[in-house]
Length: 320
Image (cartoon, rainbow, N blue to C red; front, side, top):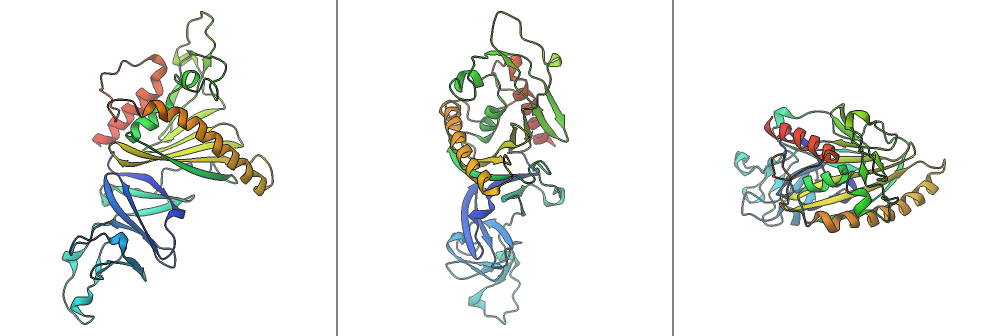
């Protein structure tokens, strides 16, 4: 995992007011909880007292209450009350504090800061201003692979006419021009520039352009397919552990002026996304090793330029 990053980990809707949700993310067992007034917290899902899962407890005011001996913890992880010691106890409870993680929300997504708190940035790595007035529908799927492999698949223009020959890759455009890759506002941007192979040589990246249909990736785990001004697909790749990832896939659109019609379109688009995603999954989960790396021994092609640039930048971020 890349340290000191905001990771998109879960839909906001999965943590209801007054409830607790247990998830495994970034190799950690976590308990996310929300107070009745909507304040979100996230702590390690293990009580410091006797090791019980805090997610089996309940929300009490702004705190999480352990199911075993009712110790209470606020969203900072501070132990605020130990019933066995009594309300009047002058005891310092700091040694019972649990590890807490800062969480924020945007566009119905929960982001978790993974790293040093003093290095925390204020801006979340979302597609700010690019999805205004859109409606979306979301689905998910679990892949038995590292999140880096799942991300690279979505930056891979070479596989499109092969794996998706009967869906988005129709037309047998197997010759890969470029592709051109650039970074803009810390986002990786590229687009497919494929052609039918009639014996011509592929164009070099510098001779290609970024088309109106393009891909954009924001580190560490958000991707968008800018299909048109009115249609987008967004995926956030939630890392479960080193060999497991959950893809949350959203179909956005504003094709008509009627929100309810656009919601119907989004539902249909979501079903289409699943068909395409399952074509990818069948192949990607077979890749070895599970995680990708800049120095991996793989023999990459010119058409793999987006993957090479992704790996380079990822390696830079890991060493910062």
